[in-house]
Length: 92
Image (cartoon, rainbow, N blue to C red):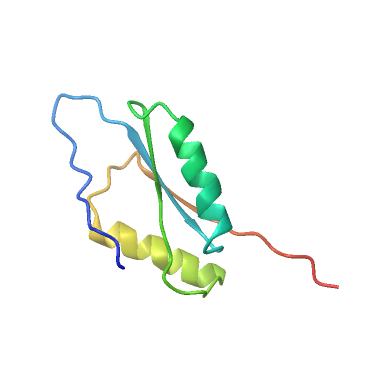
């Protein structure tokens, strides 16, 4: 199931929360961590959007492409931030 597009509209003269968009290389575990963090935030000040993946491509390029696609499809404010979370497993 694909993402539902949200415009992230901001009402003039009203304070709106700062948007942080997080894309992770992991498909399952990392989004759980960030969703749990999101539940603890003051949503009047911060909105954390965790992007979900419908594929297993975890390359940094694929994660960056996911963030770029999000930025192209949504109205972002200049203060919003896009973040990539990439880890590297130890390889002997």
